[in-house]
Image (cartoon, rainbow, N blue to C red; front, side, top):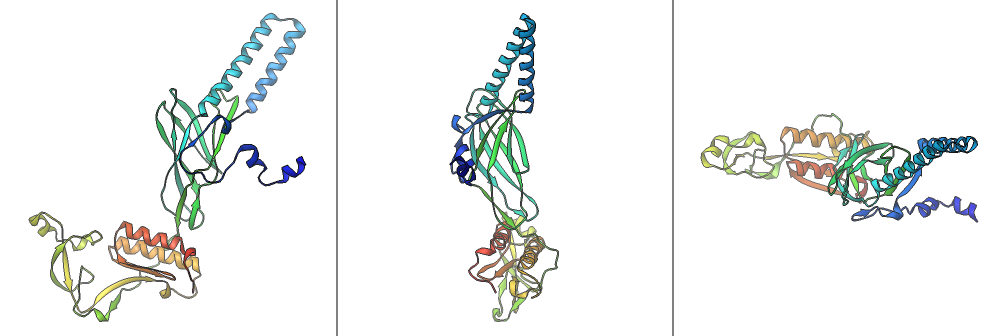
Length: 323
């Protein structure tokens, strides 16, 4: 019966109370905090046992005093180690998007409601670890870097919070799993931008700096307009930002289109190429749109538009169809 229990995949979840992703504040109550001696603690206990045996064999009164004094100090250090972690509150913070191959930084907010400082609290996830000190009645942010090898959604796995303060004889730890995820964008390549496409049906269209045609007037500045087309002198005179308008026989559109990519590229290479084009168009101040199977984003400019395009590329698996 016990062997079958050990073989179950959820045995440790049963023992340590492990859960799935948790929403809201996570309070480290007594039932979630565990304490065990470290290697130094076991060595210390072995030394105390030898001291006790020697004191008994040789009837050393001072040996008894020293042995039990050190044993008492060890027990007190265990209580301090436990107190350093118990009753902390963990809340999910930010997790900004990153490119594949970089580290996604998950921010954990650690609240200390007690009247004493917490020292050297370590947050660990896989091979990544960071330690923080939390003053009494304050909150601190533990920025935990997690490798992001592939594009898509990167959920934060189980995080171990531990401490060995004050003397390292005991290790106190708890498991938490805040409901957090980071968006991992495709790794961009360095391919040059494609040529803009001309819309022949635009006629004598008026566009906000889409080409180098005749000057047609001014209009109030809109978020996303290229800084190169701002009328700085007129803006200084009028007291507000104005954008130059140009007229021409056609309006040029820069579309970053899945179908324009070489057929030899696989899906991941295509996504990397499109991500590189998005960054290049943004850096050049060109309004651009994005077309991929199952999604189309109209031409625009600005950091919000850039992030929306990169996120759509990162979540391409969710598209309803592929070629």
